[in-house]
Length: 143
Image 1 (cartoon, rainbow, N blue to C red):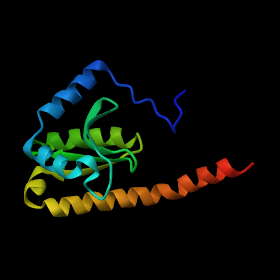
Image 2: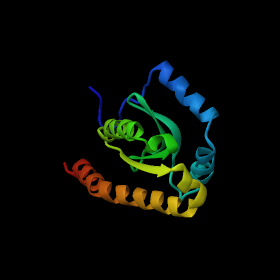
Image 3: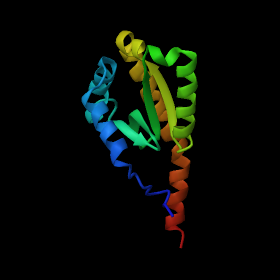
Image 4: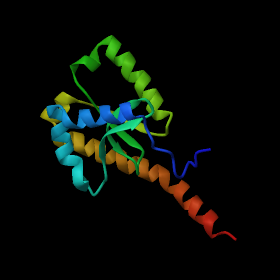
């Protein structure tokens, strides 16, 4: 049984290789956003890129806030793309993450606004998690 405090992040070799390939072959929008998120550049928040979750690879993940940031190019705005994205988001959200979708166009034309939205989502998610953390800490202290 997997301990919810220490989940098993092991993934298949194929999925791991795909994630590595996506890191090497980033889109322009991914490179721009990564330059803003890497090394805790956004308010000291830690992000990882191209992270396997279930059978999908999430573009950017903040594990502390359980937030996934997905960048969407033009193909995501077709009916088929929107259905696929909804199914993908449902699987990721079932793992306790919130999925925040951002268009590539927004990254290119409104980078500051996108970063503010991401930072606000992290704060919101962290605030929601605080009572649970406090409860766990109190449980540990109770004899």
